[in-house]
Length: 106
Image 1 (cartoon, rainbow, N blue to C red):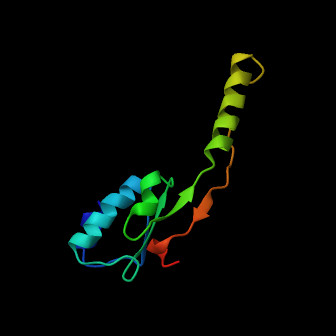
Image 2: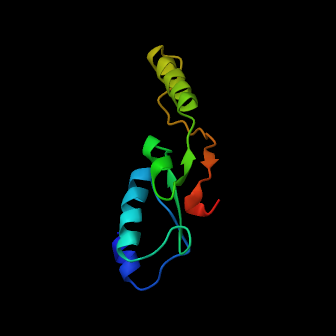
């Protein structure tokens, strides 16, 4: 998909990708076309996987606090198992942390 976009003739100013693995693939597609990160395009991922800080340049990313996610999910699951909660979907917001690295020129 990134290759199709890049081959369309216009390079966006920035990419925000669904996860850091997608960003890894995007890095490859950009390099194949001689497009430099962050000089020509900024890239930010999602997940802050362990490899993200070792990419060249290191990938800016969003980190979701996994302990908080696990706590909220397990609390909800235990309430469901105990019969103390209904089966209606629950929307809960958890603020991710922005981890700035060189792929966004920071």
